[in-house]
Length: 270
Image (tube, rainbow, N blue to C red; front, side):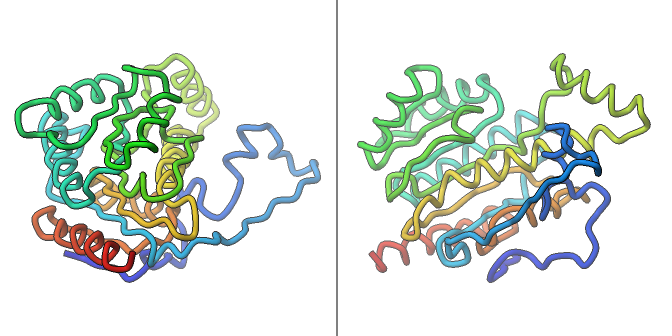
């Protein structure tokens, strides 16, 4: 088990595809304002939140990558979500990248003994506004969501106190628009993964993480269930681009105790 008191150390030199960390190159390219002849200004301002004390980022490493064994990965995510529900007593956004995974997780949680005791809200079964209102009002709900819940959703306070991210939010390569963008990059001699797929995943991951801490008094745990952030070279860049929460990396059986301790301490402080 590896525990960091704050964000992992920044590397002195970034990897070739560090796409969004510390700058706006990717956004400028997407907006067509990366021409050196254009006059523009950009700035990065520090966050007002105390992430090392308000948030804990947990990365389990003893589950298969979703692109290697999707079924076993899904089964491990279900177990991690169930443990997180117990530790936090609900108040969870579980974010997925497909509606199929949302439906399958809902079916699993509705099975005997899997999710009893916590209200379950499922993207697609009601409108987003109704789901969010029920989530805020309930205080102990578990909401399963896809793209629309990764960004533009604001649930300040204790109603949202945990976040589970099932896997890295890479775009689907076979989608027509994605395929066209990647083909255009490759045609000019570029690297479509480093220039397009990875920046999109990094931005979406930061947006998802950003759902948790909305005020100076919010606190919670993010469980990122994709071991590629520690096994792949690009993973370090994705982690470094996230807010500097305290981080715990290791086998789930060893690190889930840190999750429980976080919430026990939180309840004492409150």
